[in-house]
Image (tube, rainbow, N blue to C red; front, side):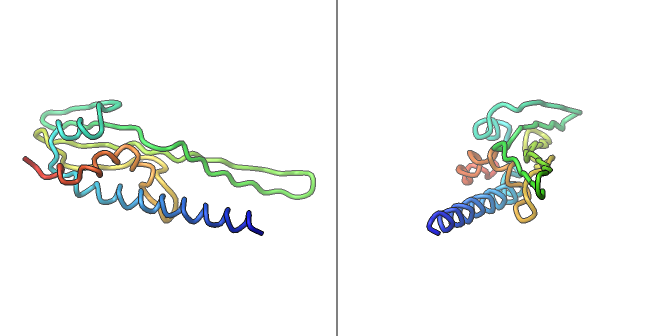
Length: 135
């Protein structure tokens, strides 16, 4: 009985963390607008890849905690399962050396937690929210 209660409490706490990460990722799409390249490098580090055309650059960052969803069903003597891994690619679009847009690609979260896997790459920027104001 006690183990079931503890397991339920742990699941509830983990869901709360995922919701918090999803909220952080959603807020970053507005709060990071206007940040300079230097500010992005300071809080996110060097990008995984870069692309540019004219004055527009796109920096891409891999993000996630390797969360895997597993669904198993079966009956007597047989079982089948499906797994899927959540991850996020954070694309930071810069124009004129400042963040113009953030978008997220991939299976970034659950039904109630879209973008939560993106928060791992953004967490240092969120911790420095006052640094987001353009200079």
